[in-house]
Structure formats: structure tokens, C-alpha cells
Length: 471
Ligand code: SAM
Ligand code: SF4
Image (cartoon, rainbow, N blue to C red; front, side):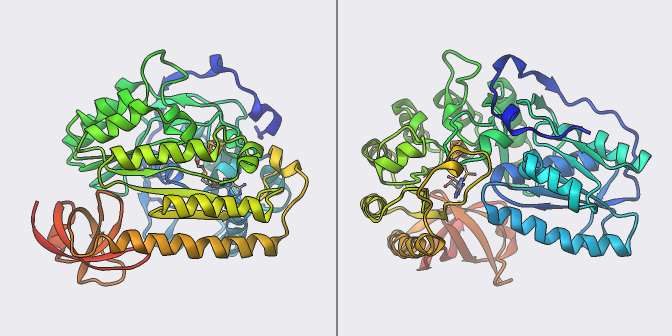
């Protein structure tokens, strides 16, 4: 049994990062068995789940449409805020009942919660229904751990606290046939004081650019229209392995593969260079959409958060992006109620929001994470104050989001149609170049195509439109 240790997780030793190939050779031990993967959290977890499905499928497992038909259930978890924890622990209650009526059911836990010492101790103590745990650093060991569980019927906990390797060619079953996630950098070395990611995802480790380009070239051949380059801080790409190859170089090289749409997420303002903005502005197939987390508009709080920029620097970058990248939209992340945040600090945040008029924002009440520096800071903000600030912030965010959407009324925009609309089976839905969700009057034959759409109505979080003509 290998369990995580948060002090070890904090250590950084670049020499330990190894580049390897996925090399698992098991017989079809999943034949006649079904799996169900439940994903919590960010896009990186969504993509990890595609790898989990890929690895399971490679040894004969089939996907179960309904969780009740599954022989193996895997929870791919998130640790970013306490409510992400609560959701998983709540669901474990449901799984306990399922396990009571099906003794052969195997339940596994992966993802960021698996990297938390306190979670593993709690699982060992109280959650006997969990049969195996695999950490984020050794996800490629999933089949070995699962097979061991099946062969021995002993509980398996295998979580490493070191940085982990960069493993190429892990099998993947992608959820979409048109839009694909591509990892470019794992982990994070920023250590924002509120954030657990540097502990659960380890040190910053870039993939080699040749491997990324080859993956995108294959996706183009397979008919994919869009790729999104993924990392906790994509703007740090290359810093750990190259002297002279950055995200700007990578964006240019990926854009030149001929992929029709290129996106990237998430950008840390501190690592965003002028050269990157210029490349985004230059290539038509790099989409004019940037997610640029602000976190706070108060310089005092930004410093306490260890964000490494001031609100003035953020605004300068923001304006540069808006000026240079034509018709761009910018969204952000904001935390309210960080320890020590006064009403004046909160007003500083509102000031920046009023200046930027973001297209949208993910807003959060600060949630203390065990073993992070902010969890030990004085002047915790009472829950009701956090909620009041969150409410006031959301009202302003929604107002600007509405205004930005209204500007698109009656325009004709290009949309990549990805699926049937969830709300209305007579409609399809897709995304504009600047990442607005549109519900489109049009038939299913449009799915997978980039088409012209006239925007006929706008709401806070989506647009309505009708298909105009083939692109
Ligand atoms: N790497 C990205 C960045 O630096 O902006 C984001 C990573 S995180 C998965 C997504 C968002 O969760 C963060 O931008 C932050 O706003 C929020 N977040 C992270 N830790 C948090 C905490 N302890 N409490 C509340 N929100 C948090
Ligand atoms: Fe967390 Fe900061 Fe790293 Fe983003 S940059 S993952 S917020 S530590």
C-alpha cells in the first residue's frame, strides 16, 4: 500500500521527471465486463477520464450506459474546494448500497482527492466500499492496480507523492468526435496560497512539442475540427525543458498543422508574454477566446494569494489582448472572501470587473484547503459575508455577460456544432469562435460541421440562432 504525504508532495526535484511510453501488456481481463466513470472537476479531469476509458477498453471492458449495469465504477475526483469533496463523499453513500446488493461490484477512486493524505486516511478508516485508489501521478498504472484487486481480492491503494512521469501514448477514448483535449503541461509550480493543485498534480512538466504536434496531426487526420491545449498554467509551457521554445512557439506550430480551431486553457497572467498575444492575434485558426483568471482586484489580496501580478499589470495585459485580438472574448475566475479581504478589497475587485466587463466568470467563495498556506492565515471571513459578496459579484458579472451577448444579436457567426441540444431535440448546439454556446434551429446533419449561424436571441449564459448556409 502506498499512501500520499503532503510534505513530500510539496518538494520539487526536476531530475525525477522521466519521459516514458505507456507499456502495459495484459490479456483481455475485462472481457464481458462493463465500466462506468463518473468525473468531477476541471477539463484536465475530463481528459483523464478519457484515458481511464481508453485503458479499460484496451483490455476488453465495455462502457455501461447505466451505472447499475457496471461491474467496475470509477470516481475521478476533484479537490479544489470543500464542496467537491462533499459531492464525492455523498455519492459514496449511494455506492455503499449498490455494493450491498452486488458483492462483485468493484469501486475505484482516482483524481486529485486520491492525492490527499487526509482523504486516504478517511477512506482507510470509514469507506470500506472503495476497492482501489490510484493517484494522479500513476494513473497509467490503473490496469495493474485493478487486476491486482481482481486477482487477490485485496484492497489496493497506490498513490505516489513524487512528481510523476510524463507518459506518452496512454490509450484514450474521446467523448467527442469533433473537439479534442490535448495535454501540453502537467502539474503546477505557482503555489498560489489557496490552491491544492501543486500538491495533488505535482511539479510543472511539459510534454515534448514533437509529441504534441504528432498527436494534433493525427487528430486532424481523424477528422477533428478543434483541439484545446490543456494545462493548469499553459503559459508556463516549455519553461521546464526548453531554453527557447514557449507557448508562443507551440501555438504557432499547432496552428500550422491545419487544425481548424485551436484553443488553450488555463492562462496565468504572470506568464503571458507579448509574443503569445501576437501569435494569437496573427493566426485565424487560434480562437479569439482567453480565460484569464483574475482571482482578486486588490493588490493586498493578490500578494497574500501569491499571484505575482498587480491589478494594474492584469489590466494592462487585459487591454493588450482586447486591442490586438480581434472580436475576442475574455472570461475569468474570481475568489471572494479570501482571509483578510475587507469591504475595500472587495470593492477593488468590483472596480476591475467594472473596467473589464468580462464575457463571463467562474466565481467562488474561498474554501480553505488543508496544508495550503492560506488555510493557516488569520482573519477568516464569515460564511455569510462570503455569500453576500459572491451574490453581489455575480449580479455584476451576469449584467456584463448579458451585455456582451447582446452585442452579438443579429450577427452571423461561425459555430462548430457538437451535439443535439439538451433542451430541445429539434435544435442542435455548438460554440462560436469566441466560445459562446448557441442553441441552433437546424437538423442533426449539422453536427460535426462548422456552419454560419444568425444569432436571433441572447441570454446570460447562451445564445439562440438559426443555421444560415454551409461554411
Ligand atoms: N490554474 C488556474 C489558474 O491559475 O487560474 C486555475 C486552477 S483551479 C482548477 C480553478 C479555479 O478554482 C481557480 O482559478 C480559483 O479561482 C478556484 N480555486 C482554487 N482554489 C480555491 C479555493 N481554495 N477556494 C476557492 N476557489 C478556489
Ligand atoms: Fe492553483 Fe495557482 Fe497553479 Fe492555478 S496557478 S493551479 S490557481 S497554484
